[in-house]
Each structure stands twice: as C-alpha cells, then as structure tokens.
Image (cartoon, rainbow over all chains, first blue to last red; front, top):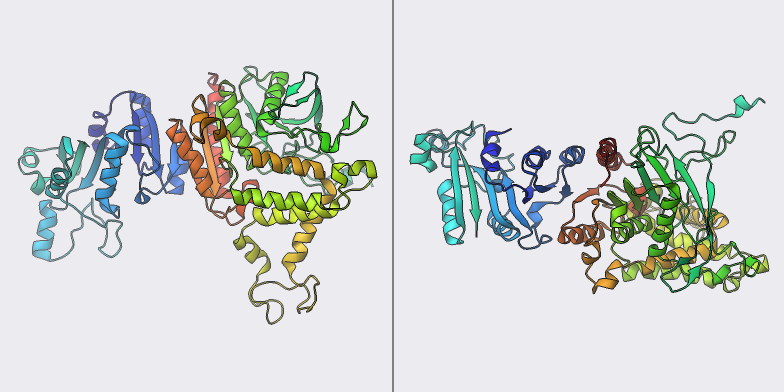
Length: 196
Length: 404
C-alpha cells in the first residue's frame, strides 16, 4: 500500500462510513473494508477504474466531483477522502466546503508547490517545475490550481476549518526533522485531516 | 434432407434448446386495485441449475413487451429462429452465467405469451376476459413472482434484475420483500413516469381504443383484432425507445439518395409530392409496428402501459422516494444509458440519490450508448463487462454460502 494511505488509515474509525472521491481502482477502500470494516462508497469517472471497483466488490458510483456533491446529504459520511486531486479541480475551495458538509471529517492530500526544488526550478531555470509529483508539461496537465502548504493553511484559517492532523512527507511518504521544522520549504506532499 | 442437414448451429455460449413450463396457482391473489384473481397460470422458463444451498437463483423481470423466453431456442430445425430477448446476457460465460446461476424468467400476469391475461378464457363466462381482466400493477406482479419463488423452492434470490418496466419490478422487490433478495440490478428505469412518459402512453392507448375493431376490448368475441391501433401504439412507443442519434445513423447517410435528402434517406430516391412513404424511417416504423401488432394482444398492451403509469413507490411515503427503501437489505446496481430520453440518466440518478439518502449500498454506471432506451437490450461492451463484473461477485458469494 502507498505510504500516504498507510498514514491516512489511522485516522479512519473502524465501522465508519467512508466516501472516497476519485477512488481509482478501489483498492484503498477494499483495504479499509477488510481491515476496518468500513461501509464504503467510491466516486469515479474512469470506466476502467469503475469496472475494477465492481470486480473488487467496492461500491462505486459514476459521478464527476467537479459538478459538486449536492446529491449527498449533510453529515451522511464519517470521513470524506480526496487523494492527490485537489489541484486538478475547477474550484478546490468549493469542493473542500462540500466535503466538510457531507463528511464529519475529511482527509486530503496534495503536492506542495512551495517545495524548495520547485522554488529553485523557477528561480534559477525560470521554468515550471517538474518532479515525480508534477510530471506534466505546463500545456498538458490535469493540474489547474497548484497550492502550497501555507496557502492551504490560510484557506483553513479564513474558512474556519479545524486542522486535526497535518503531516508533511517526502516522496516515500516519510517525514524528516527538516520537514517538521520548515514544512512549506522541505515538504513534498501534504496530508491534511480537517473538520469544521 | 436428413435432420442433421437442417439442424442449425447453436452457439457454444447459448443456453441451447429450452422449453417453457406453465405453472398453475390456485390461491387467490389480492390485487392493489382491490380486486382478486382467483387462480392463474404463469409461463416460466429457467436456465442453469439450482444448487443444493438454493442460493444461486436469479430472477429476470421483463419490460413492456417481453415474456418468459429470455434466452435460447425452441426449434433445432428452424435456422431462422431468433433466440430469446436477452440472449446476449444469459448463457455459459455470459454476464448471467448459467455455469453458476439458476435463472428464472416468467411472462407476467396480464401478459399474452401464455400466462393468464385478457386473452385467456375467463372460467366464469367461458369467454376471453378482455376488458374484464383486472388492472395489474408492478406490486401485483412482484407478489405473484414471490409465489413463483415459493413454488420453485427459492427463499432468497441471489439477484433480481430488470430493465425499464422490469427495473421497476426490481425496485418493488427490494421494497416489499427485503429478506428475499441479495442484489437488485435496476437498468434504464425511473422512480416513476414523468408527465411526458404518461402522455406517450396515452397516445398509445388512444390509438388502440379508437380502432373500430377494438369493440371496447371485446374484439375476441367479434373475431376481429385492432391491429391498426396496436401498430400505431407500437410506432409511437418505438420512437421513444430509440434516440435521434440512432435514427440519424440508420436513416441519414450523408450524400445518399436524391437531392434534397438532407441526411434523411429516401425510399425511392425522389420525393412523391403526395402522402406516400417518402422516407426510409417511415417504412421502418411501419414495419416495426406491423410485425409487433401481429404478435401482441391489444388488451395486454393497454394493461402494461397502465402498470407503468401507476408505478410510484413514493406515493405511500409523502412523495419521498428514499423512504420506501428503508427496509431494503440488498445491494444495488443502477445502470443508465446516455442517449436514453425515455428514462434518461437523470431519472436513474434520482434512484441512486434516493438510495444514498436511505443509506443503502449503491453502485451506479452511466453507459455511453447511442441506441436510446433500447440500449438495455443490447450487448454494449462496457454494459456487458459491468454486469459480468458485478455478477462475478454475486457468484463468488453463492460459493461462500451467500445467504443472509
């Protein structure tokens, strides 16, 4: 299992209701179901991934989260997940609001655009950063709204979002002393556990 | 010619030669209308074998014009015979795999393919029921199907599936008999008919009832048949089953036919400047209507459209469609098709959202398809893969003793 998911799963209560936005092939939900007996629902738009979910016995609905979560009742899930997709959405702030409405708590992950190598790439090369997290050319990328850890902290402050946990990790999803000291400079990936 | 020489080749993934059975039911069936059917027959076809645990049974509910003959062939010597109406889905290696499942399909009450219906003889009068046959609702059908399950020794279906009006029966199963099914597969259905849906049904009914050969539904007594009316009813119905896109691709080949065609195929290459059949789509519809009208009872058509119109489980719950599902225990798979405008994807999403509100386990797929409402009958690859994937899980449960 991906190391970030290993960190996330500790924040999910056994037997809870989990909604995974952009659930992929459903393997994380299948894992949560097997180990934590959660009642799961995935949301996905990729046909192949939906088929994989059905094969894995993971409940999945075909729905584009960019069109919102209006069809979900307030507080109808314990945890709403959004892994590595925030920066690819049209209005990330609106999705975060919606996630916090539908879920009692939310977990999201995103690549930190202010990581020092990204900064260096802009500063010295004058080029848009590319890295294992940001492998795309600027003209052909699903990512629309890059943000930094400081940006997201600011969003949480202004929108009265409580940060329950924040973990900043490297490519292998390990945290180092440097990252804990200066997360927005040394952190590559951010993992937030938030609530209202 | 020897028998071997005329015997057709039955595909390896077919259920092969099948024969229906007629089951008689003696106990009176109380109907939603308040009336009662004292006794009745149901025509039933089954494929595959019921296992020892009796947990691998699948019920297939047919739509408006369907019947019990869902798969396989009747006649080994007729090379022109078409297989049952859902043959693409049923058979060894197909989504409803007869290697794993015992599949049951019946002709619903009020039908005209052998089950008791308006064209059956009323034992009280010795004449066909005709208009005296009671109005049957989806609820009544499901009650009669539950009795069929009892008869077959099936306490709990592994899955119940249906498209269109069949999907409505699946929903009713989940509502009325929560203990008796583990999976509900609802394809191209709606929570209830829209005003537009009812309007189309009304045109169909008026076509039949205004045919001079209809005789208030007693046409059997007059040795006539309102064929014209049934044909018109089917023509209007058929338009709603197809999509604009499909009709364009069938009858709108660019550059063919005469000048002034503009993407609508002409029959003869020129306009008649009269009221003849100028365009291909006209003769296509007439052919479809005519073929149908030769094989379908007019009173049954009226009954089926009424069953559609009356379906509305939310009516007992102040219009909230999630509430009737409160007792449901099964998992749901809902499927819609992008070009379906009779029961559009939005209608399926209403079902999904209501099930989510009722905190049920739901799966939903919106299949890209050009064929409109009729897509649910077709072997569209993604649709077949999804059914096979889902039913694969259901089959695995049966092996591990899937019984609640």
